[in-house]
Image (cartoon, rainbow, N blue to C red):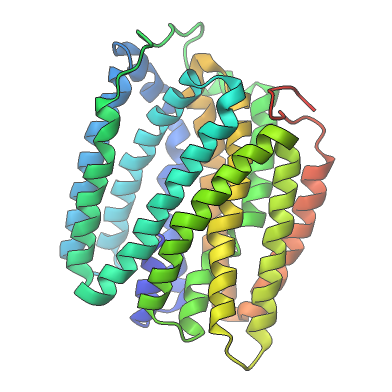
Length: 378
């Protein structure tokens, strides 16, 4: 998903069609509907076998979906979107199980580091999907590059199934996992609001960075090489830094700082969009820092809040609701971003994103209840 916009733009597809790819995020904000059933299935297993079964089946089905995508070819068609929706449906279901497992097995004092590992791992995945994929696609074409991605999905999914845990079995839930149990809790209501605000400030401007680079004259090989390296190294380092900062300062400070840093980078893109001269190296630097560094740094804090706001008796359900809010606002932002950039231009688009950032800084600063690095409310 991260590599596709640049590939499709390189083939001449218009920005408003590329923005439609974000419709495939639908399962990521609807997965709360089936999260209670996934959570109940997880607790039926012995030890973490329920989670293992879901991850093994899920990685296999995702790889098969990628094989179908490789055969179909690069284009925005109903078949393409259907395949991507299928992959997203399976991956989002696996995510419910993994998040519930994580919340159950990490102590509160380790939430920052656990989410540093989770977000850092996501950026290693980004390095593969948005970096290595573009490099292979530029050299070997669509079919081979997507088949390689399918093999990598299987390979990266296997290690978890060999992990031995000392925990004999998940604790029997004190309540029946359900959406109503989650939605009536104040922590969940607060978390959904904060997630929407933070996502708009962090992600909406990032949605058009790939196409911006292409329109700025950068080729896929260059974008893939430097974006992949940025995701691998800058993203991982920023995630670790975010984990340390959450531990030392609490999540509110890290969230606000991340929005301020992101707004500064978007300001740079706005300025470059009005200049006639081509500063390719600066565009690449701003893009990498924005999509890899600042995003990783901020999302460690947001996900740490998710964990503390989740009830262990239905951790997969609560955590999933927060992620669904993130997915919903990401999809809306991606579609709106494509429309605005296509019809109004990059300058107007990034100007609007800066206004959203200022609103987000004020809103999150005004919220009084936040878990800090030690699990205390401040």
